Image (cartoon, rainbow, N blue to C red; front, side, top):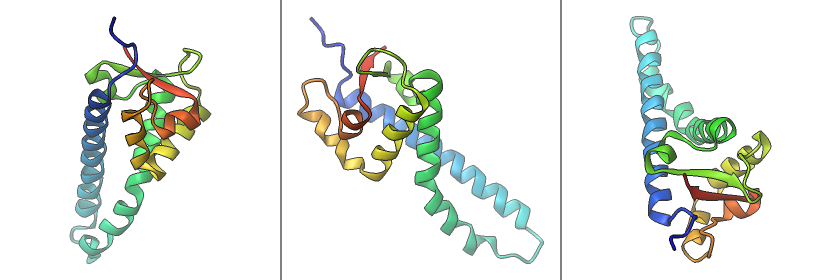
Length: 135
């Protein structure tokens, strides 16, 4: 019988897809800032990357929180066929989604714990009391 828990590879692929989406959004935002600054004498090319780079983790955590809170999965997770549930089997609440996203953002290497955990829970799953299951 196949385990209901999502494997490490599918979780990682979903995460990479989401990171590429958020990175693309950030680059599009930088392009808009650059276009708005064109012809004004403001040198946005030297200013914009600093707040954008610092804001990228915040943007990613917000993206994850929003999708997990609304749908229980991000677009990347939907692509690979997995979703987040609480350990009770319900969609994560907004606070649960936020805790999960903030812990993952602050401690991304905690994902490696999912390799040895029998339910493939990473550190952020343990702290938020969530599971990633096949959808």
